[in-house]
Length: 203
Length: 167
Image 1 (spheres, rainbow over the protein chains, first blue to last red):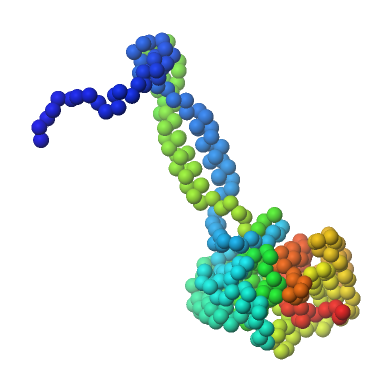
Image 2: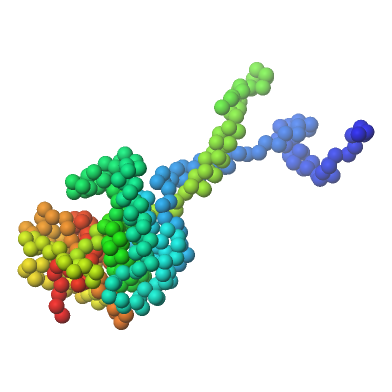
């Protein structure tokens, strides 16, 4: 590849001379070409932002998924949530672990004497058996294993460290009909989920 | 952070701090915290499904203890005591339930000899197509109960309440 003599540089025509002049006039010398950028406001802003973000930082992370059209009810409770199977009830549908189980209308129309949601029961039943198996085999963190031992002796668990055996989260919209909640609670109970965590928003 | 004193000139006393690593660290931290930030604080109310359901035939009734039962209806809340069958009706105030009176009622019951050393309560909601009860009202009732000191909240079917008002 032949080597050419250096020619005119790209963007050389863009006039930055006024900046150069200004910078030069600030220091008194006419040949100074350094442009001092004032970083103080930037550093101030960054510091404030980092401080704010560190204050709102939650080490527990987000256990629940945001759902379109789902507004959680408000409560004063500040107990932390823990990992468990999630039943989500939006204005139109019921999902379990992200999979559609039934629509709200069909469940409210159903007046069957069993008083439970069959599709949800099947899934919860399978999940309950698997969780029971895991608990039996000791596949649990130390604090949860202790919580399971305490539960056998009727000792009250600490919030956030409840035995996962029979534990599920209900994440329902605030305007959900109570009949639907009753059905879901009954279904969960029938499947072996005797401990339900109702997800709420802090006031 | 590095610092250079002067620029060789003996008269110069300016100290230049190298803030580039500081800005780098801040930028990384800001990006990380923004990505991992949780803006909505979610908590939980722990309940135990209990009482009689249409599915179960035998009801676990405790005849030795008086049970505090709460029935939430669309236009009122009932607070009842089993065995002595004493009920207190709390009608709706405006377009909302009278939560203040409900809380005071629970506080009175908590202070009574029956429940001074007990923390259990049962809550049910009676909803119909004509007069529906919203989930928010159940949560509010349970939240008040927990606040008053009844931390063992049992959610049941209206028919499963130990003390149910007969209308």
